[in-house]
Length: 71
Image 1 (tube, rainbow, N blue to C red):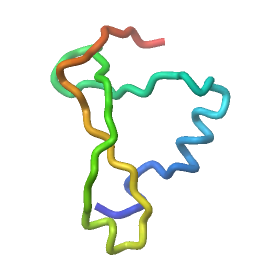
Image 2 (cartoon, rainbow, N blue to C red):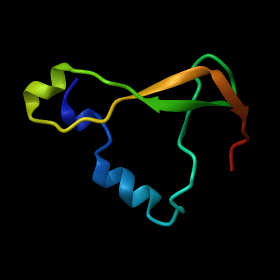
Image 3 (tube, rainbow, N blue to C red):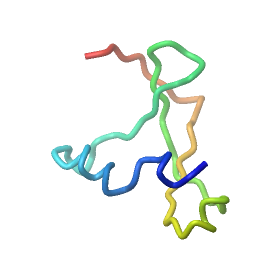
Image 4 (cartoon, helix red, strand yellow):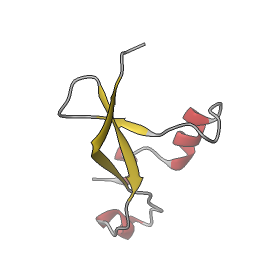
């Protein structure tokens, strides 16, 4: 994977600039249709470290999910 294949923190900040500080971050489940999963930060080292990237890695918590609908 290349750094450009990911979302930067700047892009994420732009997407979330109008959200309050207590907004919840979740990700879409790949296994369950219309389910969103809780996420937690994860300590790590990756191959992107060699590309000079600052990295925030999030882990999906499959034990915590909510149902959602598309807007």
